[in-house]
Image (cartoon, rainbow, N blue to C red):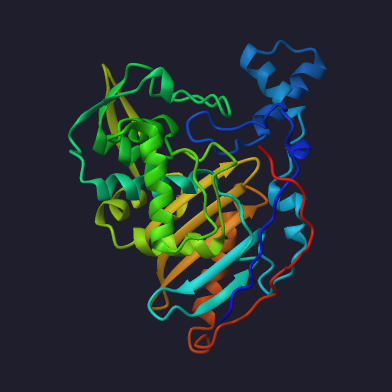
Length: 346
């Protein structure tokens, strides 16, 4: 099935510096606004609020910035499953049949889906995984201002950093993996882009290893290629689907959990996965999973809410299981095309 080229470029003014909506300081994932709303109610009632509650209230007062997909109008694209993601692609990995497609060639920021390529480069480099890596000031996020439980000076093995980056989307761990790559960060980013070209990911660009930058961009079509490659790597499969892990950092033992709740769901057989979120990208999810006897690659970009990407995956799973005997031909959903183009940001 021919895939129409579709690239969206965005105005710099649309994303002028502004306060971020509340995000998880460890993963960059969107926080629930429930606590922020409670803080606002306390403030209005005159009740004493803690400094943390006041910060939540201030964050809640800042409207969430629209994603690139929202600006491009991609959410207006209809589809038969009423997906909340503005971009979706489901492919049978063995037959290459496209079972579902929606704006699959749109080029958008990909947030922490970036870390799947970060893991690919580290795995293929065959670096000593027991080598100790020290988190440095260079690993601190200056892009989004997110925090981390890995303090500057924390020491962990390369394997632990890889595990946390893929499973729990730990940004400092991912950045440290790139920084300690032979030749440094610039050589690592060059390797990321080189691997993308080698795989045939022609619409993909990386500028750093975490996904915090909105200039890390790709399409669902390209990400499906990356997921297929990652699914063949035992280390990426193991680390990305691990439900949780404990890591000793100094005198503390930190508990980390997977950012994708589906890995603990017995209804799912997931081979490899990665989640992602920044405001410019919306909620994102990629997976390779076995459904109704088929190895399917699933890509969901720019979903409207934190739980809606999971909901979209569940919709697709139920749809495939219900139509297991009638999905041999590709099922084409509308592919939105547009001629609207404006200047690129940054």
